[in-house]
Every structure is written in structure tokens, then in C-alpha cells.
Length: 173
Image (tube, rainbow, N blue to C red; front, side, top):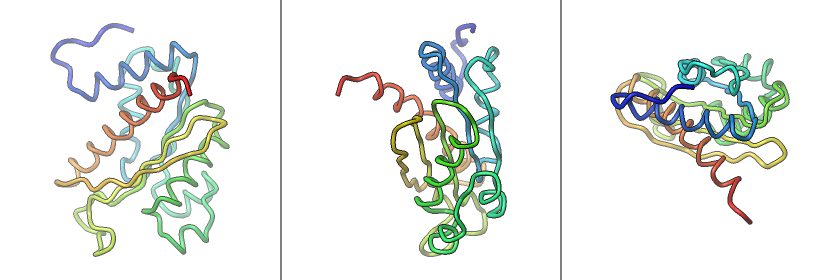
């Protein structure tokens, strides 16, 4: 891996640091994406040498794809909706069942400009992270801006969360 140029943006810097941390541990990661449409996977694979740390990205945009590819239960979708903590958790759990990696992230949200509601306005995004063998956890975000900004903020938050999770895994308990 080559160092990042001084002019690189924060996203590239996060990808570089995350990739370095994964490589140090000899870990690989995968993504399950809905509202970002594969942007997290793209960000990871923009870095030369990413095949050492990135295994797979699943874009599960429809509810049917979430069920079929990730095993998200229909009752989760019916009871909570696709944009929910339970759905994001089921996505990341299903991802680690489907792909043999140590680290996973799943995102589901409403990027807009349409599709929002009073309870789930445009910009509502759930992100779930998981280290194999540990419980998954999810966090709700409310990003502002147009579709591109919401999606970019989601990618940044997902990658930053992965890096933070790796740092926490290194801390003594």
C-alpha cells in the first residue's frame, strides 16, 4: 500500500487507516449495503491492494434481496421496516453468515429526496457493525443534505465506525 497524498480527502484517509488496521490483524471485511448502493465497497476497493482486506460487498436494495441474500426475517421487515435497527442488525448478522470474514458493516436508510415520513425523515440511516463472535450493534443517524450528501455521510460514518470498532477491540477489557 502506498501512503495517501496530502491532498486526499478524509474518506480516503479513513479507508487507508482501516485497511492498514485490517492488514495488521490479517482480517478481512465485507459490506451489506442498501441506501449506499455499493459505495462503501467502492471506497474500500479504490485503494490499491484492497484485495488483502476486502472480501465482498452485497447490495441488497430491495426487501426481497435483504431476505434472500442476508436472511433478514420477513417479520423484522413487516414489524420495523427496512430502515430500522432490527433490520440493520439482521443484515450484518446475515452478512457474516454468508461471507467468511472477521468484520462486517450493514447500512439501510432513506437517502431521498423522496421516501421519508414523519417517523423516518429523509436522512434517517441505520448502520450496524459486527466482529465475528461478538454481538452486533447498530446506531441511528440523521444526516442532512441532498441524496449525495446523505449517502456520502453514511459511507463516512460506516467506515469510521469500522475503524473505531477495531481500535476498541485492541483495548484491554
